[in-house]
Image (cartoon, rainbow, N blue to C red):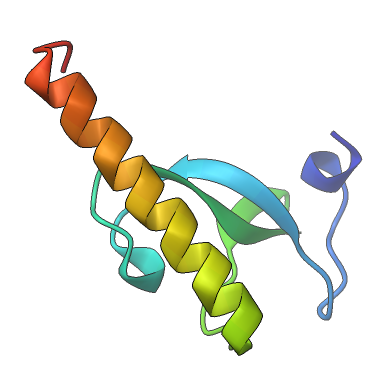
Length: 79
């Protein structure tokens, strides 16, 4: 909660789940945890971060899992 109510230092960020608008190539509408900062009292997604190979692998694995779960829920006609 501290991160949400206090300004974030320029070189720092926190993760927060949000509905994607296509950031970081995450499917629009998918709920995903994005790097975020609080600026001027508003929580925003940090754009343009570069990920190392390990982080890219974990990012892709998480995205693939969320896509699969989304497809399963859709198949069950829950969304």
